[in-house]
Amino acid sequence: MSESPDQAIAIGNFLEFKSSNYPKLSEDEAFERFASSVLLRQYGADHADIERGLVSGTNDGGIDGIFLFLNRRELVDSDSVRLTRRKAALAGLQTGMSLDVVVVQTKKEKKWDSNVLPKIESTLKVIFDDNQSAADLRSFPLNDDIIEKAMTWRTLRAKLAMLVPVVHFHVYYATFAPQGNVDKYMQTKSKQLKDWLTGCLPTGSTTTVEYVGDAELVTRLRVSTDFMAKLVLTKPPVRQANALVGLVSIKDYIDFLRYEKSATIREEMFAVNVRDYAGANVRVNDAIGMTLESNSDSAFWWLNNGITVIADKANNPLELEWVLTNPLIVNGLQTSHVIHEQAVAKAITRNRLKESILVRVITESDPEVREAIISGTNNQTAIASLQLHANDEKQIRIEQFLHSHGWHYERRRYQYRGVKVAASKIRNMTEVGQAVMAIRLLQPDTARARPASLLGTDLGWMRVFKPDDSEELYLKALMVVDAVDDYLRTPAAKAVADDSTNARFYLASGYVLQSSGVTKLEDYEKVPIGKLKDKPTQSTLTCLHKLLNEEVNKIDDGKTALDRIFKGPNLKSAFFNRIVSQP
Image 1: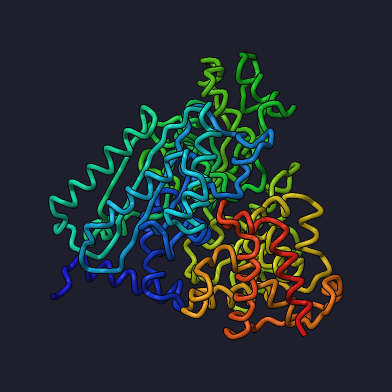
Image 2: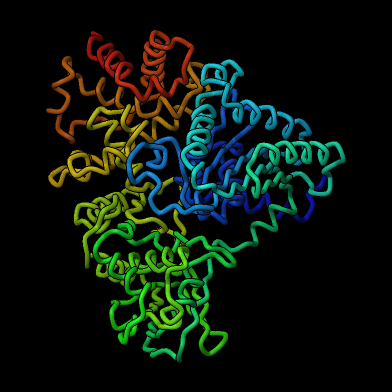
């Protein structure tokens, strides 16, 4: 049967996507990533987000991916600070914020499978049932990735209960099948799943159950990944070269910060800002808030340094209205969040709402110039986030060294947006940090469970990114983990255990430890970086995988999720002791 025009377009885009981004993956694995990237465009999900959400494999419950987003941008997974008991775990979240749950199933086929939605419904019913323990989910059976996502959903739902989030639940089944071939039986199953979900979610929630076939894929492919925001000035701006400076009323600036017809702030605007919002009680922010709450003879913009925005484009269809493409606030995060929070609390006086704030907009395409602007504006005040290191000399050296070897180090989110580089060759700070934890620190448990916790402390950061360590370490770390990932996709690996998420960092640690030749674990840290091996063979990894699986089976009592074993200390000790004791 010949392809429809929509199938030809969708398949052509997929093949180009695979060739450009994931040439080593099978077509089924690449299609999971292709379809997910198309379906998650509205959330600004990058390659790392997609990898974190994918759960496919044996006993996947008919689900390829589960993604949880707060306020449409913040991806939450098992190591998210939002799930912890820290005092600031829910900082920045407001009552009624949005919680999106996206469930994806993909099939690289040209016909529909009428059993997909019933299988997803069966899986979601056990996930939603809090009486079903991790052991119950294992016996369903569901694999460890799905169980981890289930527990993340349950924990997040409980943590956010007091904030009464508006839940938007989406279920997508994506394939190349003709959109018009969705029959009445499939429509009935879609309605059945939607009705059940609606009954499980709080009042005001929304549910979407959608068959995404050839035509819908094409429609979604046409949607730009860019985001726009309208900036309304009070008077014509001062313009020079690629920049403009003008005054914006506080009321209009609030609209600029938020999604249209929503009280939710657009967090994507702050993606390159290395600071986190410090909170309303910090002295400077408290002063800004008090100014907004009271009237005085001093105009607001006299008392504030203003806002700096970098945008890809700035068009003015009307004299005072500017439409900015991909605006990024590089200076003014604290002011912006205080204004937003005070507006939510209805604490800004009417007079202040009419007053203005100074806004600078720079449109610059040259990456080096943009980097200079971002670095300059972000080095003006104290910083409290992982991104504080983005401009470190060490980080720049790592980026340059990895680039010379075909890797793209993403020191800052969206750094490679619009740049044609293979997604499979992009690694962010956390991913590189995890690789180093595995092959240099021999902490696969930390790399698996809580990498952000280690990197979030000064001591932990310095252990992973020592100023004196050669950049060769980071290349070797990526090469070893990449080789392990390739192995875990093979039939040989799946024959041992189809549990790549848990095993990958353990196999990376096991390989470098074994290949170092040390007979005492404490001697490993003395091995020079230049002596570390970085080319594991399939036979070597298979042997290590079998050894690892033996130790897992000794610890596993069948009553808990397997990820607890991999995230705990016992497996690591047993696995390493077996390796160093081998003749």
